[in-house]
Length: 610
Image (cartoon, rainbow, N blue to C red; front, side):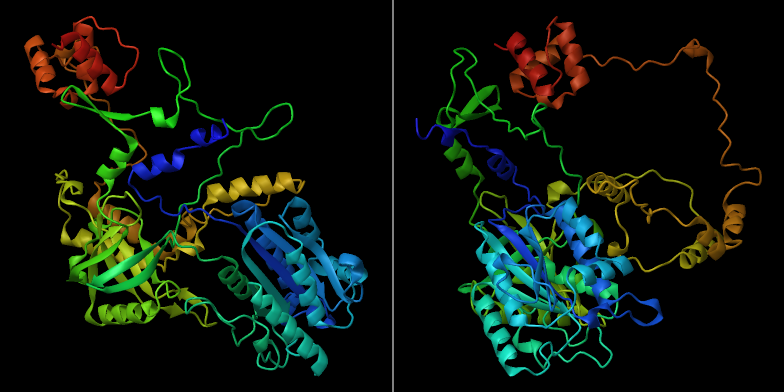
């Protein structure tokens, strides 16, 4: 009986894998992510910028609040901490470190923590920080040591440990060699324990020189795609948010595969999802007396004896030609397996051969995994460079996971682009486009309408040219989701009313009218008749005398007895539609409890079968 619970584990993952379709962004995380904000609380951080710009401390608190709220929404199990250094007051475990103030321990973010960060924003927040913590001497080595103790006190398994330093001082110890040496030693100890140290340096009057001290503190980038130490400080809040967002998220591969370029020539690659559809979180069922989450379990019982069945006692079957083919689970897996997971190069095609209608599902991104096979990045980069120069794309056979069906994919090359702040906008690699099979392509017969004249086409071209704009997907937020989370935030933070959300996808009618001017009316005059009114309802059609004044009923589709028996004999009942099958059941007086097609077919086979 010790292994009884093992027989009744949730099999949703196995069932999803049997579907043979890629989930597009769902992966299992083995641990929690952790993030520690180490913020400089010196007097320089509270100096306001020019032209009413917020201080560096205000910008930092705004970023901290943004990360807190995003963690609550997307990854509520992650751990976050907020620590200030260079303070006059001290608050840490046993007050072992002077001038270090642990504002939040390493724990899951919540509504109370967001409210406490809100209290540190603005002029009132600056006064509260001065009263609570103050500004004093600086010892970054003690601050790093205190952060190390925060990590050591956590007994949970952490998949990522990251520490972000926010400061506007490039020489925090003002040339004190002993403190500099202590900080470098402690930073090296943290890096050896797997903590990634990042610097978010802020603007200062004479410029921020990272080579004076912090170049030896921060961790080097793990690969070429990761944002390294930036020489220029953040001048605006948006720039700071971009850098924190680029560092905050850990890249996780949907799958790690081998790209076979030929016999004995393999490249280790990872498949990443650059964009995943965001949905509202599913509702959690609670026990109404205690409000504790409840878990549902599924049990399978024998229909005749009522005994509980083990997974080893359950088989799968498929009806084929009125015969029930019974198979074991291992046999089903063996049937579905074509080959081991991986990418196999078939050849190259010019880019003009790839059409828009070949895109049948969301694309994923291919990037080399140097840690798995040495030399993969070099060979991958050479392949990307040559494909870009020759304007071709590789065609590969792709099996993304075990027991997944093979799929032909096109690897579209993509070059790296960066913005003015040297922050990567698009990484170098291949976009994996799934190509359709011959069975997936449909032959369409679109309805033919009147052809537009050349004057109408030219006028519409003018309208299109006036309404053009540069589209960026990151500039438009989902208004439904934003309103949903604003309401949740208002409830959690005890706000009087949720913050207003701007619906960015609504057309700006006034701006459109101003741009177009008289073009719309000119186009209407060319296309529509003079008395056309789009708001008027069309005239009701007169009913013919043959209809008898009633609505015309759809004729019943009936199948003769001989035809039905022939379908049953040949096993082709599945070709008939559900309404036809229902009429056939009524014709033979068969009472059915369900309306599914397979149930109707089974009922007809039981009645008319040999």
